[in-house]
Image 1 (cartoon, rainbow, N blue to C red):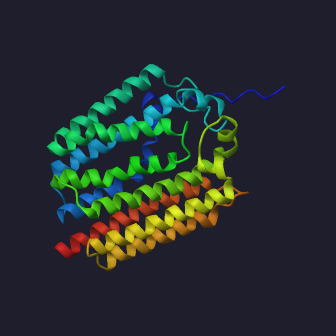
Image 2: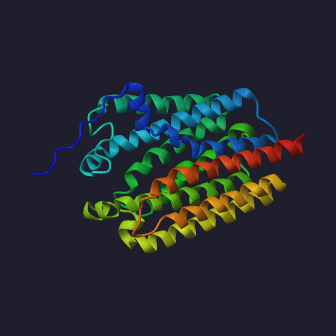
Length: 295
């Protein structure tokens, strides 16, 4: 007889909601969006612009994560790693998640409307990308790149929020974020390699196996670092910005040093700790470089 599943500890609705949308993971895309805003303005952007960029980021991310939990609820219930998530475990109802997703989408569109006309016009496209990612694993192993695109549009959106237009610099920064996210998502997906293969879900680890998936991840991260260096060149960056690029390279190398095909015990450290520090380091160094040169 199999052991009974451990009881789910009760949580407040707020704590459960923040857990559902993985609020702490905002540290991935937000620093790059803020760096793009500073680069676009050549200084600290107006407070109103920063406020609505933050609201747009919160709305888009909350909509994307809640929709992901809605779309994956049946799959999550079958996967021992995810069965305790809020919807399959019954902590949050499906109805609440749908209403929360709708409200978050509305917040994103409202914030975009308060920035400028181009942001508003592009908001449905952005929503289609961030929501559509949740469906791609059912038919394409390139879902990692779609997730990368979902976060990668943040720097481009922040630049448009400040300037009302798009130039090559934020596009290159967005591509850097795209490959960075895709690379670490491949590492994270190693945990579900066997489950995905057994249930017909597509991922690079499920399709190629762990050793080759890690090689693909390393190639994605090499591309990301090269593109970040290109941003440094296009921005005319100084020593501080250069230090941020070097630190990013160090954090990327660390991820691949601590994860092995036969040892996934440090995937969480590679996924959250290293990548969280990477985004913060690049933002702090890049923004400080811009502000010091402007002053």
